[in-house]
Each structure stands twice: as C-alpha cells, then as structure tokens.
Image (cartoon, rainbow, N blue to C red; front, side, top):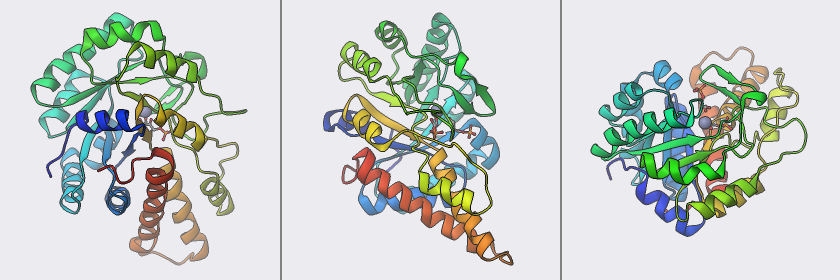
Length: 309
Ligand code: G3H
Ligand code: 13P
Ligand code: ZN
C-alpha cells in the first residue's frame, strides 16, 4: 500500500469513536518501534516530523525510513509535517512526498491565520495532500519556541466554523488545556471538554486534533529519576481523558514526549547498570523495544485504533 493522506483514516476514526496516533519521529529506532507496534495490532498510523526533526535527520533520510516502514507492513501510514510555520516549509514537504501537513498559524491574527492556511490548503489539495490548521494556542516548548502559560489561549468555539469554511482545512487542532512537553499541569490535570463539545456541535463530523497529548507516563519519569536524571514534577494528560477525547470528535492524538521519556529511561538504565557499555545497539535496542511496548499500549488501550487498519 502506498503512503496515504488522512482523509479516510479520519472518517473511519470519527465514525468509530477512536483516534489515530500521530507519533513524532526523528531516527530509525523510533520509526521501527512505532511501526512494529502498529503492525502487531493492525493499526493505522501517522508518522509526523517537526521542522526541527527534519533539520536534524534530513528529509530524504526520514522519507526513506518511512518508506522502509511501509515496505515492512501493509498498514495505512500517513507522513505528516508537524507544526509547519510557513508556506515554503509546507510546500517543500509536499513536493518531497509528505501526504499531510500542518500549517500552524495559531500565533497570528485570525485573518492572517486564515490567509496563510488557505494558501497552504490550495497548494496541498492540488497535490492530494491533507492539511491540519490550528486555532487557539498551546503552552509549552515546540521547536525551541517556548510559549508561556500567559501567552497560551483556549480555542474560541465561535471562530471555528468561519475558519474551516474560509480555509478548507481537513482537520483542526484546538487548545483545550494540554501543552507541549513533560510539565503540563502543576496541580490536577484539567481539560476544557466543554470547548471540545461546543466545537463538535458547530462542526459536526469534522476531525479535531489534540496536541500535547502525552501522558508523561509516571513509570518512565520514576525510572529517569532513579537512574540519575532529574524530572521532578513532570506530569501529563491522564489516559482516561484521552480515551474520552478519542470517543468524541478528536481523531488525531499527538504524542512525542512519551516516546522521548521511554527512550531516555531505558538508555539511562543501561548505562547505570552497565557503565562500561559502548555498543550503541546495546542501548538503542532496548530503547526501541520500550517504544514498541509504549506505542502498543497506546494503540490498544488509549486510542482504540488497534484492529482498524
Ligand atoms: O510539538 C512539538 C513536538 O514535540 C516536536 O518537538 O520541535 O522539538 O521536534 P520538536
Ligand atoms: P507532547 O509533548 O505532549 O508529546 O505533544 C506532542 C505534540 O503535540 C506534537 O505536535
Ligand atoms: Zn504539537
């Protein structure tokens, strides 16, 4: 099966009350761990690449890794640009074989966001590529830009119909209280499901995207702290909240930080237990296995997309 865009997978996810996992990738072990998990449970997959990851690993290397993942499975896989910040970047990814892009104009004015997003949609649709836009602004760090809690803002439901109809986007990321990174909540986790419900009412049948959706799995944080790391107070989105979002209009759930934690925890453990280890396969191998275990659990128990390929 060739790479696919997100149209079909989102339609089925919306109707089936589950979400597709969108996992950030930047090296071979991460691509392999995610893909092997999806293959074992027969789940559709979005492999997403941030502009930082693309700079780090190089567009061609990433595409070839993803093509290899495709050749090893018979799954619907979309390759998606995460947080595209310009028309030129989106165009370059589309020209280079991505099947889906996000144009993130959430920091712009409403009118500027619409103009930029529409420009990307026009180009993308002419090439069979789907587009995710964003309204509202998440807190946290993405691509070295740190959005403070004061600068973040919830999505205003009264804006979503106009944004979607004027831009023609295929999916919409909204801000309901999640944030990027491993420190999402200082107190109790709280998400504005009332905003999601209102958006769902205004855009019936339209796929919504949830960013900043790592659970910051406590076992990995504990492991990191146990093996010489320092992550006090790390906290993510409880799994039951993600299950609730997936049963609603959320069709794509973005996960990066949990992959980083799984990888880092297992590598730290190897080095503490075997200080003389210097064969990269001996620490990247366990990291890949941990990613596979983590993703398999998400696909089956959190996103509900196992068996839906
Ligand atoms: O939304 C941000 C993702 O976690 C990607 O992070 O820009 O550091 O690759 P990055
Ligand atoms: P996390 O930092 O919660 O994994 O969010 C990732 C994300 O939203 C990528 O776009
Ligand atoms: Zn994001």
